[in-house]
Image (tube, rainbow, N blue to C red; front, side, top):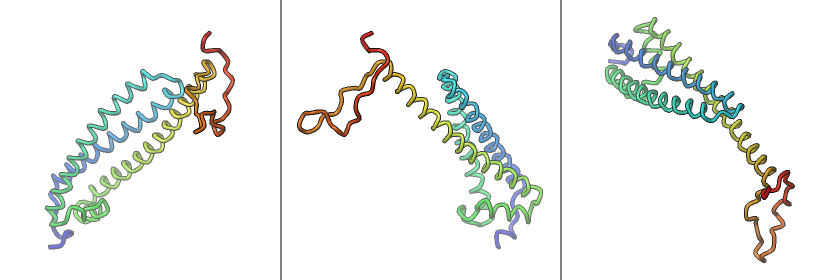
Length: 178
């Protein structure tokens, strides 16, 4: 019997959609955390940023568990349809649902589109936040050097002299001994 002729169990489809809905909810929560991080990075509020990172870790753990449940359900649905698990892609699932449960196909499409949008936005915000952190760390390093002038040990050539490839020392505002 071909996969489109074999009926999916309606209760399993509903459970699958519920799990997908939970994944979308968690993705939306992660997206909100990424948005909340930006001002904390800009305003240099590490304690609050740390709290968000802890919350993010809990959500990621929950997402991993939910993803595992979705994976198992999808495997069961594929077996029910006499399909290889790999063949039951999102597109294949949508087409099967369109034939068997059109109202659920629409919901499936909404959820998966929402997940894709959230993942793309999380990726963009994560990159922006990473760049902000890099800039903040460079600024802190520059300010530290301007205040203390700490150059470290320096770089020497094979002959024992100062390496000419190294940029000349910068001037500091306050002497480290002060």
